[in-house]
Amino acid sequence: MDISDIVKTISQENFAEDLIKGLSSIPKYLPSRYLYDDKGDVLFQKIMNLEEYYLTRAEFQILQNNKEDLLDYFIHYNKPFDLIELGAGDGLKTRILLKFLTDKNAAFQYIPVDISGNILKLLSSELRKEFPDLVLKPHCNDYFSAMSELRKFEGKRKVVLFMGGNIGNFSLQESINFYNELNKSLLAGDLVLTGFDLKKDPRLILKAYDDSEGITAKFNLNLLERINKEFSGDFKTENFSHFPYYDPTTGECKSFLLSTVNQSVRLKALDLNISFRAWESIQTEVSKKYSENEIEALADLTGFAKIHNFYDDNKYFTDSLWVKK
Image (cartoon, rainbow, N blue to C red; front, top):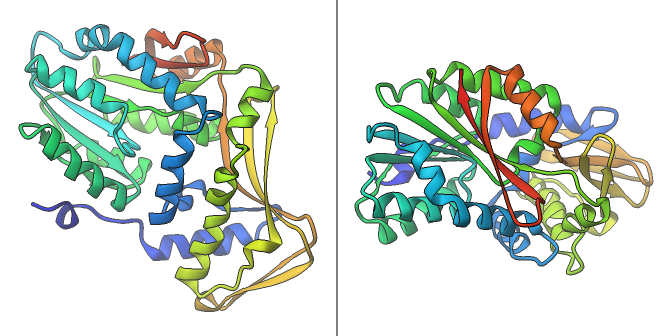
């Protein structure tokens, strides 16, 4: 069955509701998930290849150097298991694990979950060519909705991947809610592998979100172009500026779009007018960085126990393996 027949997309109604709510709030904000449309996906792939964006390389190194140890944890008495990845993206890093698992004839099926139907179609097509015997069941959904789907996969051990530092896009309370909900979808002994970007030199972190080529700025501004296209808007991107900010105390790196002039924007499809003062902001993303103590506390608070933290050579990043208690 083609992926287009089995995936479901985030509804236009939800996008509309979030636009009305976020752009009518003080201060204004928009959920980061809407940064990812066809153009946004392409731009984010470019971001991941930037010299300043250390996260992808660090996690790639972790998986490459620790795939044998991870496999030992994943395979439990050689019983079949479900490998479920939340926020699969292009699957570049995950292919390290998939190749190693298939080479070892591990009994598993891969269930990639992503909000972008476009990315899932591309990923599925590539994986079917690269791993023709792989049992692949893609799902297009957001994280929280996808977790209710996990309950349908019963009878086998679950290994959930949540990599790339995506947990950083949540506030602390959202992270707690996320893992509490995930815990409800799992059984004792099921595993979760999460990628956490670690606290480090603030200047190094900030460069990852304000690259010298301006690709991250284009990625952020593309959100306005998407709104124009889908809701007949008249945002003028030249009147907005990309601005990232990192707080070393909280570990939060936030991205904003700043209105550089007093202006009014209309979304005709929603019959919505939005006024902006000069230098008023729209928060479009947050990416929290963690300490080792914060990671362990989060696991314990949500019903998991940390098994092991895997690090890259620079200790910029960790993939933390947890087990449900």
